[in-house]
Image: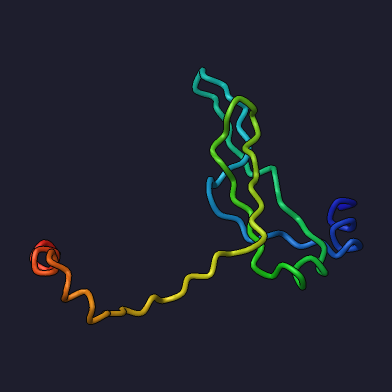
Length: 102
């Protein structure tokens, strides 16, 4: 209960998470392997005002029993590219070949 009180008192929020479903494993090889989501990326409410698109990605585990968390602050914005055609391209001696290949 004290942990939940701390989260509330400090106004912490979980970041949206993607990637691996579990962030910890006991790495037992005898068939008693346990997986769990122990690790969390938490930020102050004001963080989300400055970085509203922040996310956390649970990476593939390495040598540790915990998976690293990758925090992305800026989400790449994708813009639709418009097709442009310059009439001077027709003057290229390879223009017809390029069109056929395409």
